[in-house]
Image 1 (cartoon, rainbow, N blue to C red):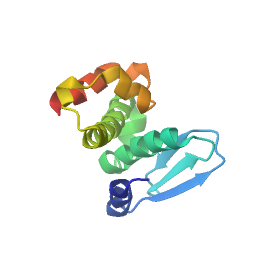
Image 2 (image 1 turned 90 degrees about the vertical axis):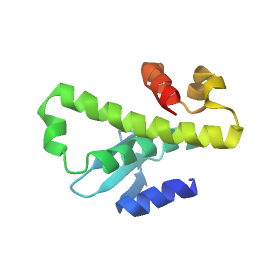
Image 3 (image 1 turned 60 degrees about the vertical axis):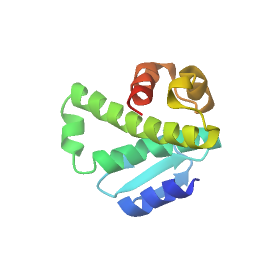
Length: 129
């Protein structure tokens, strides 16, 4: 796990529990804790952890809003994905040394196990970088 991710966890005061779960990961704001399934490989673990940290950073006190409507839930899921993709893209640029405008976004998605449903979000993050 990258040092910066550890710093985010400490800054948010989030507990991370890894175990045998039926879901890849989830954030419980009442406990300020993230549960991550131990069966994930390292890349999947990082993606899920960053997504759930996005919820912790942006939606900690908004559980009622999250559960209020499907539209709000989807909006918050998109926000958590944006948090995750932004972190991964920053790390990608740092380690590859590429200019953001030269990045093959599909290769970036493949290397970071980002599903195709997030293609437009990836393009937005890259364009805003």
